[in-house]
Length: 74
Image (cartoon, rainbow, N blue to C red; front, side):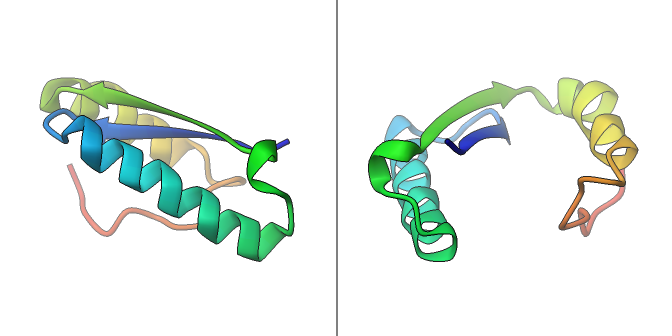
C-alpha cells in the first residue's frame, strides 16, 4: 500500500494540499494500477531555516532512492 510523505515549505493552503494529494493519488493510480483506497498521503510544513538545515541535506544523502534531484542549491 503506497504512502507518500510530502515535505513543503510552509505557506501553502489546506486547499492546495488537498489538491496536491488528490492529483498525486490519481497519477500514482495510473502508473501503479492500485485503487484509490490503497493510497495515503501526509504533508508536513517546514520553515526555510528547517529546510536549509534539515531537509535539503537529507535529500542529498538519499542517493540510492532519489529519483528526481533538486534543481536548486542551498
